[in-house]
Image (tube, rainbow, N blue to C red; front, side, top):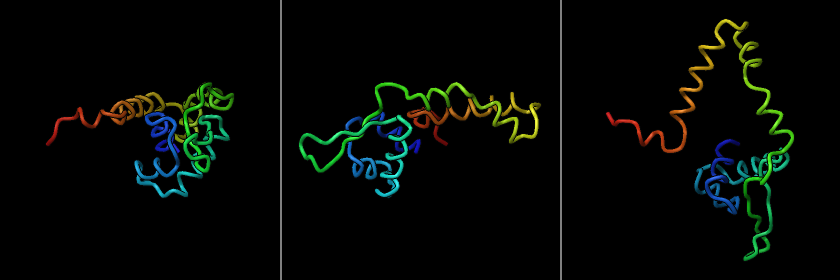
Length: 114
């Protein structure tokens, strides 16, 4: 779902087929992801004014209650449970933050080539 949401953020008012083409995901998988994201309140869909048979997808204007709840929850509880205790949570959190920084759009093009 994250791939689809990232594509929608970069390409607002886009059709499912176009998302599938850009991401390389099967159209059925993109459709399912859009449906879930719409249920979660992360995206909205509207008929394409040029072709009413198509729906266009865009990021929701406001953060849904569910998204706000997930963002506020943090990952510490899940990491503590997964790691069997809190002792390694700071190290794993730092590693995840580093990984996220390197996986941000454009970050791979900033890395030196071998």
